[in-house]
Length: 259
Ligand SMILES: [Zn+2]
Image: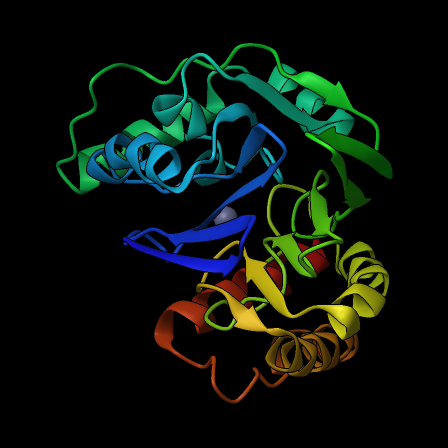
């Protein structure tokens, strides 16, 4: 796991699993943990990283309801869980789904956890919304398309965008669980002005990148999705993301359009 300070008030943590991104943000005497690393040893050491850096975590936020972003309460079991209304609805409507998928991952990689994942019903956050942390506010933006739920978080004083599963340098746009290419394109347009101002962007997977690189990925992702809508399976993949795993995601994307 890698931990990098992006700003005096922002630490980006990248998991060894799927290069999943987690961000600690603070202001005043409060900090939030946004999304999560995946492996138990990473979750175990996260509170020490936060404490040593002076980030007293009082809340855990999730960008969307996919299981690999929901593990923050292993690290901060006392913290309140917050999620966008749509994400809270997904957690209610898909009871046990995150736990099941986590168990499948753990079974495949022979991972043992100290306890089953407990997810209290989250505090529902409207999006768009300004969420106070200490003396400052985070800007919550709707970010649907990858899945039907989702929010991106802009940290204005640090110029950091926490994108959720968008703008990944390693993963092509993925439509899953009822995600939509049209909604995905609308989210990219919504994120674009933030990306243009951003010093750093933390995507859901692939580690933090600078704003210029994120803007280039945004253009590639838009081109890919427009081609996907026009040409389905024949759409070309972004040049740097044509691995076998990404071609499989592409095949599922094309399939989901015909459904
Ligand atoms: Zn994800």
